[in-house]
Length: 209
Length: 209
Image 1 (cartoon, rainbow over the protein chains, first blue to last red):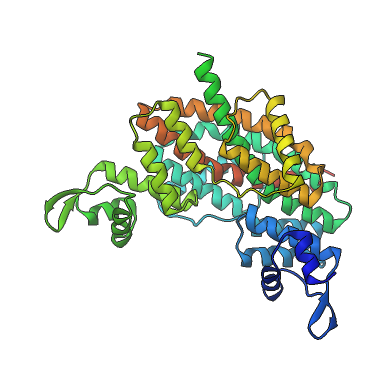
Image 2 (cartoon, rainbow over the protein chains, first blue to last red):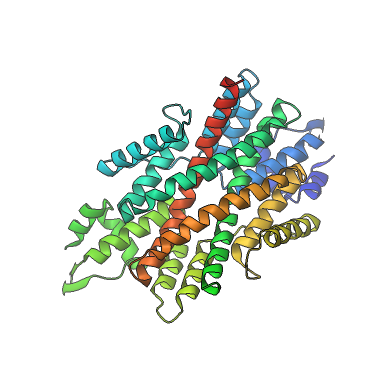
């Protein structure tokens, strides 16, 4: 298909498609003349993935490129590819320093140990967790920390479903794509559902007495 | 305290504090001379909240100002204030159009009905949920939708703890602040925990056979 058809199929404007091509988010089409290229179903699929990562996931163009590069890497074991993609999707929060960071780090490691989780040192979401916990302690003492185990239990259950869904992929490329989509779009869905559940819980408590 | 002390106590640079004052994110200090103002513990607390919303929550300066304005509004009932603050925190995703959006809307409403949730029409997280579901359907058909009930169950359990924590506030202002912090920092914590749980679940399945 021509670029106009690719645009029509995906709802992405032609200048935007050309920008993604220049930025390497989309592989070049097959040249049919010096100024015209032909695009495939693979481009439709890739373009939809790029839009999901940018719009729903809120990733930067550079972060999307890194995720796509890692997804394309066939040299690594499946586990390594999944790990590296997750690494790029982590959206790691900047670390702070000082006493609160140390307290937060201790609390995070105790939580992981209590739940028996196998986590590599230097895991990016672990660093994000520690920073978020440090912010919480800074703002409100350690009061909210008793919610942590409930949060961890909920995350555990959700993760089992997520991994099951990833494993259902037709092949390795499909499995990696499922994980990327599940992580990014799944975050948006969970965030929306948690807010809806807040609204319901508040309404229930107010009307129920 | 002087602005230098406020900066030292919070780790926020003096020019940044002045920017927040100009943007209305921080109430003015008490003038002690035409060029000097005195700041209180209230400023320390507010400044930490502003940083959490900007850094951990990723909110824009305009969104933070709206949240703070709503928090300060004493005319409204507690329920209205909580609702409006949640409204501003929703980070609503832009709606898309077409058939997939309609399918996503139907799926979202059926989910809410199945779980017996009381949700007002026009709820911003409902709109975000519908857009995220439409993205998912666009990318991968309706395959992942069977995860939705597990996600909703997990959100329900988390929300019960969240609301309980909010209600423990010393007064109305404290309760609203707890909700703001719990929502924004809680999202960051849940996102990190879900990724850690993915890492653990993948490791467990690989090592466990």
